[in-house]
Image (cartoon, rainbow, N blue to C red; front, side):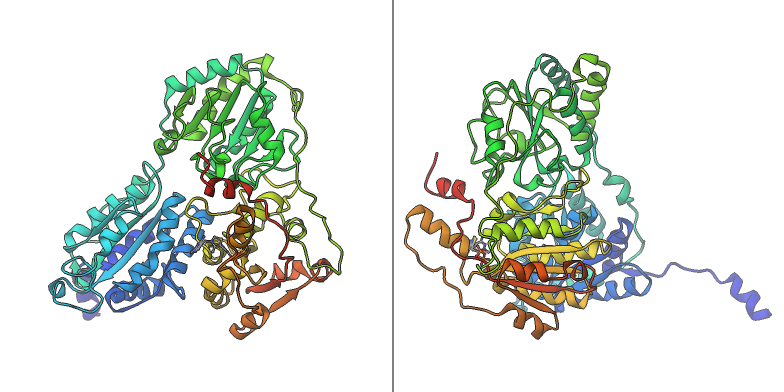
Length: 583
Ligand SMILES: Cc1ncc(C[n+]2csc(CCOP(=O)(O)OP(=O)(O)O)c2C)c(N)n1
């Protein structure tokens, strides 16, 4: 009794925590569940903190097989969950291995926190193993500076909270992207007096700023416009319902950029397909139609792939460019109007007026004078005996997967085939955005790690990764992470024993045919060596006989080694034209 009484009077002092625990506490504060990476000496205190966090039901590490794969996973996780993707590595080679995945996130504007280790401060400059703080050796902070929105060394534990907050604010505004903190091991281990003092969730709330004067000007243009085409970019996700309503009220049509395929149901009567790399003629025709008074380009960076190689039909004075990102607006100097602002509030304001204007209640398709989406015949040579055609595979894979399947499509022929042919569901819910690609930076293998991160972010839906044999040989080891984590991921490998996109590009450009052959690899055997079930698909019939529904429910990865027709030419003419020096 006396003891109990005494205990109740003992003052409970807050336990000092390490700086790494404080960092983890901040990540927990904003709902981060996983940190993707590969451990090593200089980052060990962070792994210790993650072990403590995991024990109390907080976040946990996911161990990738290569650090670039970790960054791809963080990218896939961010895109699917909307939360912050976090990746980490040790100093030196771990940090340099991360760079390709981080640069890809930078070019695709994916928010991400990158944490790398350093030897302890007192060892820097003395030739410590893997030191890379720029004191006589390589400088990883400088290396990350050109592919992140913030890159700094934390040289004192008291800097941690401020630098972390600064970095995370820069990850979201003004242009989203990765940010990098390099933290020496002794700083990670330092004892801190307090737990988190900032409320990060509050600080990181998205801005809703809108340029009202520009919106009023646009309202004036829309009131006069007879025919409107809306080019929907990947930034439209949160506003897609409002954009559809505006197009319906205006009796206009929409086309999408390659990275926005899947935002609109293909059966919507006003949808005319993909404008840009590997897109549809019907979409280009809509953009080129001189009877159109206004083109609204929304949430797109107007880069090579999603402007059809900076097509003249887009870049003229019929263009209104609407975007929250000022860097995107600088790509359309000739536009008659730039509307800066978050896309959802911009469309809320536009619709407020249109909903009042009865004359704008035009029935869907009433003003449509365009033809239906043009596609090459996807059933071309679908006979069971022939090698399976990639066009057919794309169409059937899309249609036979459940409507909520997430597709991640890799650089190579896969991206060209999928942009043009991946089957879309009639009742695809708007805003789904289920086909994800990487634009601009376009590294081989992004989809492999990306699919793992996507599936970890959302176990309720199946994930399909469409990739090539070259990309698989470069990054295929990450498939084993999907096995460890028991993730439903179908890896579809377009196996043509070649770096196919380069091979066809060389042919189309009349260049030498060189450096493109790959050895014949049996990916079913490779998968099975990792403990992953695999199937070899030679013909359309083989594909039809697969129990795809069961594969997409299986709590683990599956590999399809698809021996596609190598001679089919992917729709990549635009790329060849631009590489050939088109101005
Ligand atoms: C990391 C990286 N290296 C090189 C390239 C250049 N490249 C673009 S597509 C491609 C070929 C891809 O081959 P594969 O993965 O087999 O797909 P396929 O085109 O044959 O379907 C290459 C080498 C690249 N995009 N990324």
